[in-house]
Length: 141
Image (tube, rainbow, N blue to C red; front, side, top):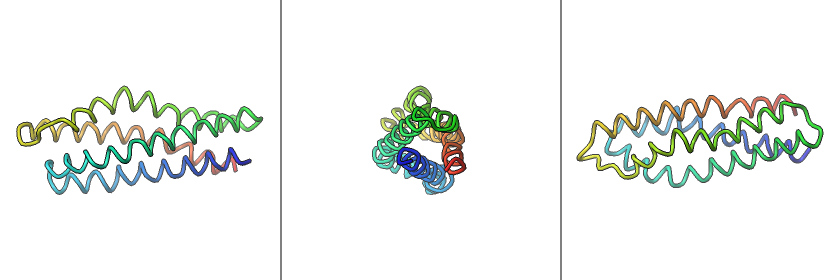
């Protein structure tokens, strides 16, 4: 029961943070201008990325463990969705992150804005795939 509760809490925090970034933080930063958004992204991503990965790993492993211990298949499905955040992030989001961390906004404003919109789209996909585990886990509890 501890693994199920731990997985649910980790998935809930992951989902809440991801939704907040997608619907509030990133759009608000962009409304203040691409220069501000890029500067802010540099600070925010270095703090947020490790937290999000720890939550995805902890929640995913705990959920898979709950399934392994005889739990419902929903634990395996949710855990797998959380663990899929790693390849999804590595393949599709990290390249944009690296470019946003290094770009000179004064020299490449349009490219920076394009990268922000691309990042937003990819983060939204990641959010849509990463939030269902929390709902599944709550239902299973």
